[in-house]
Length: 480
Ligand code: FAD
Image (cartoon, rainbow, N blue to C red; front, side, top):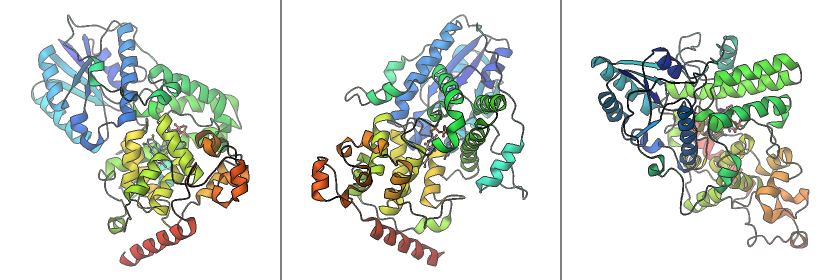
């Protein structure tokens, strides 16, 4: 008799309730990971996330190896793979941690049902949220659609501390079933190998996540409240991809942050509170995805179903490649392309630019982020895109249109971020850096800038793009 431990988006051993329960059942363990591309369909991991997944699985396999165990890899529909592995190994129990994507919830329920009908025990746990999406309800008994009351309700609860015990030795079966070779999944790009920028920045895996958390709580938490808005400063935790793949869980983060705040008092305290509220935005996104499973594809505000998006392949491409002529937008899009990550402030600016200045459908931006972000996450990505586009629950109003020049001047005042990611503008003085088109030919020439040659002219004029966006919005409102 053996127990199957099915790893999914919980690629860690510490504070992993399914792992702890599987160990506690006392049977030899078969740890397995199934590449679920077929089940996820359009929401199978994009290129950058696949690169991350390779590293994360390598790290998990090593940790299991140190415990005398082995990670079994299989590819295909989980609804076929899990019962097949149960049959091959003679497993009597299967343990896993829950996922909340619509494609996963219905499928997992079917798998659990089928296993139980065939006499196999199936148990699922919560490893990735502080609070199950169905556990928090408004006074009327429905789901939250507004963040602040959700945050208050989440903050008022006690969140159990993470479990610390990680066994050093795992019971293994007489033999392990066949495993695919990780390389055969081709998760990493070969030709061309575009992942150099990702390799130099990230360390996928549980140890990398723990190191990030330590560095953040130790050095950056105190200044987080203000520094989190400055893209040139290393002021945020960069835990998003680690959280997405479950190399660390929110309970571990919540308690580490609280511990640090308690031990040091202000100013860490205010940074800690702001940081915990960001973790709560993640919880809120999962709450929304669970209750509104159409969120990745359909505007939550129904009136937006008929919004006159002005889709334009050429402009979309300019946005994707960081060639819009607006330096802060281009800097963000190039940071994304090179590192698989973009600063939150700049994510808001580029998303606003796409949906309001270019009036391109938010789903185009959502898809691009899905393919290029190492932290691409169905709940966070779709909730955030809807929020910026103005069509989501508790969204930024559509008529609030970021001025990319002012955003650059405010949050990248010295221009360090732009100079780094748009080096062809590096020679410009700060006053021109955020709006190079306002420079005279001589000023630009002195910095080696020739608009239309070394750097593009703005692809739209801010004032007229803003006016067009507002008029499209007014049309929508009159249809409402
Ligand atoms: P920190 O500031 O250190 O925050 C800590 C954690 O809180 C993050 O790791 C993240 O898990 C969570 N968090 C922070 N801000 C948000 C937020 N606004 N919404 C939800 N959770 C948040 N985040 C993703 O994880 N995956 C995505 O696919 C994603 N797509 C986005 C798309 C757009 C258009 C926008 C505006 C934001 C998106 N975000 C997404 C949210 C946010 O930008 C990132 O979580 C954050 O920048 C990650 O960096 P960090 O870990 O240093 O954040």
